[in-house]
Image (tube, rainbow, N blue to C red):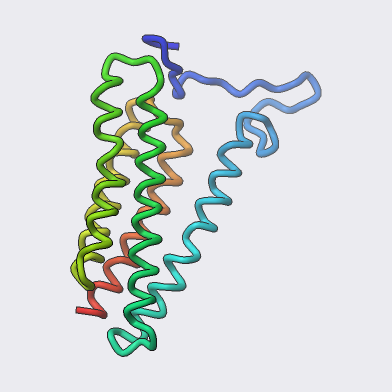
Length: 173
């Protein structure tokens, strides 16, 4: 612990006497990472399916307005979720707690506003927001505020989501 908050960089995995030294995918330390990877990759399914549908059909997609709204609404809800993660980081005792809490509400506000923006501009806005959020998370992991496995997860998820947003923007412009 440092300044009343855990330092994820210095946390070591513990092994029982029967286990070989080194990380174990089934150890309690790795359980949250494995679950987060599973849920995170599963959360990409709506992005990939909806963006494929919109990118394939463009504005001629049957039910374009509905599919476009579904894509925007899902994007906004995921941005709000990511802001919630930052809120959790801000709740830990730290020197910059107030600053972290204030910034953590920006993704949900941005997502809500972008749902009101017409296609294709909303998709460009979402791409920017997800890229900024991903950068913030990567920087926080580097500074020890978040576990290192979270940085890798966020990098993969951010790349896929931003590419989906860009593909839909380009195809529906």
